[in-house]
Length: 260
Image: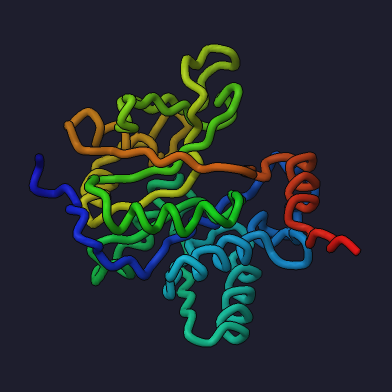
């Protein structure tokens, strides 16, 4: 195995990067004055649900990369820290809104002391039970990069993930045409890696959309024979991409009424 593989010797993971720089344009007027990660979900900002779940899994330090309406996310971060002693949230503005790869590079300097860390989209919600399971495997498994996957009928809205029976990722197909994917696994937007990921991010060239795209770095890792491992997520998952998704997320996270 390549030397860079992270060996599963119960490595410590205490930090997570959440990418929260985007606009959320598919939500229309809902994000005209509010960044998507701050939209209310059952009485709390969307991003708070993600951080709460990761805190429950043992993480203490969060780096949030902002861009669109940064001030609102920065204000949220200060409030969250104040209300949750012992949790540290550092915000960093993406210098140029040039894609998810560029957003991760903006966080690089703040991760210099971390051999392993978690990162992901700051606007994707899933069943809270998935987070401790993901962190557990991120600490003990061997990989160069681990990514969460969820099962969908057709992964055309995200990225189709092709895996071996041992859940080793063989290929990513970003936003395939509807009905063309030969897999039901979708990139669930949660990852674990070490400093090696930045070597690949630094070599990214702009995509046809003019962006530095994180999936491109992962695809190159696979091409180089790096171990990219998938872990299945279970239960509720949503990228909260449309107004209908937002209402479904609000219904899911709404406190359930106790039986009398």
